[in-house]
Image 1: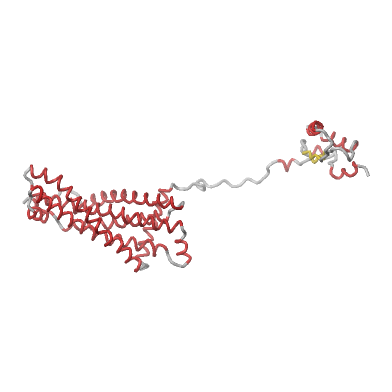
Image 2: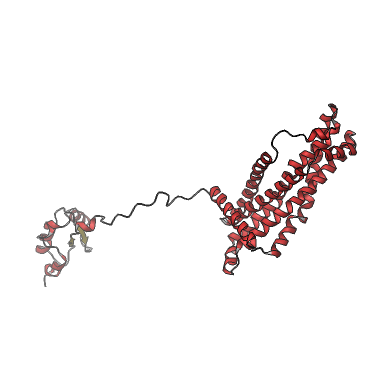
Length: 350
């Protein structure tokens, strides 16, 4: 049997070649005796019918032959149906700070809703309350004492030169109650407790412990977030009152020992200058600050990504955002609480 008859089923007749792609795809069959130059000359042959005639007339089994497989034009063009255009923001992801800020708002809403519904883990709440309150008392009182003494040095020197030593106690009492005690206490708690909250929840997030709580049927917000928010909101007002007392006492002792201003004069001036609203505003501020610290720290913890490095970044970022939020909230609350001209020092000097 001739080779041309064996190859004829694989060859495309010249009668249908004009209907197909004018540039056919050539498949070589191997013959080790053929030279490389002959390969190239046959590969560059532009006319498919000539190849067909050459194979049908001069085909021998011991030579290299080319099978001319003409590919239809429909298969060489990309005729896939066009997909519908994607929505405008389908691939857009919000920046991570914005995403975390929104998650903090969502967590705050969940905490309020779950707490009002009574879904509070009592034992965990008591543990966190002990952690925020008694274990943080020492560092808060020490900080308040030195802040009060530093504040006293700046005021007593100037007021005694002007003969206003009877108003020193009122100024110190107002500054400590309205601003210094709530802010200093919140800063200490943010550095000590807020960082611990963010690191603890971040470690639980990257190690998938929060997913384990969901599998076990426990709500992570009820078990992890709500107890911390309640503990901070309840403990900070009491810490603020204690810091105010210690700060005023240390200021009076320093003024009596160094500048010769009697303790009785300072305490009497403070009593005349203070109003109940001053202490109430301090407690309200500290309660707001405690909620901000707990919510921001927990939100940054549960949105941690990237393993141990992500835990460190979340901890640092949580403390920074907490401090900035505390100062912004302090300005807003002070603007709302204390408007108009005050007359507290007028009573302190009488």
